Image (cartoon, rainbow, N blue to C red):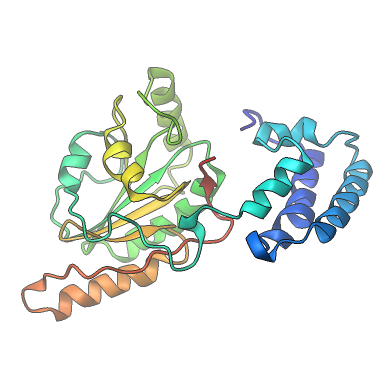
Length: 270
């Protein structure tokens, strides 16, 4: 990912890429794929890149791990990971996760301290370099404020979410602290940072099978009820969880919900 903000012309190129080579082919994978429309799209994109001022658009696109037209073609033909397809269910639905244990292994950065009083908890995995995570922050904050006292939202930062091994080095910690301070208006809920062993990532995120961030894991009485995007599809899952605990005698409910994802609104693991 680029470490510097994009220029206006770079933003134009990225927009052209998304408009011409990405969005039209999102659902054209496997037996729905045809080469000819993509070949025409390549020609159109080349022309648009020249107009913007890029003789070689991959000088910029390679910074986003987009190496060539053929790698883009291959990825489209293959299609998205199963977790981004309609009807996918996380393998940890119905499993037990103790949010107090997760929180105890993390460092508290901002927001209310988590005490475990709420029966419904959302673990929101994110990273500061993830643009969709930043975009999701205000929406998650709105949910956290709307359901104050009923649902606890724990934003769990891990700057190496897609890497193996130790994940939290001191420079990353300083960067995340600065990021949270800069974006405190966007992230108005409890923010934690994963420990050096990546405990939360390994214990929950990796086992959940979701290949992107932001990633929300919804717990009801410690039972996983939802895994997926915190945007669009989390609210219905939350409302169902609230209804279930208010209408069930004794308040215990461990029914599984289908997980869904929001198209194009996550940073995805390669």
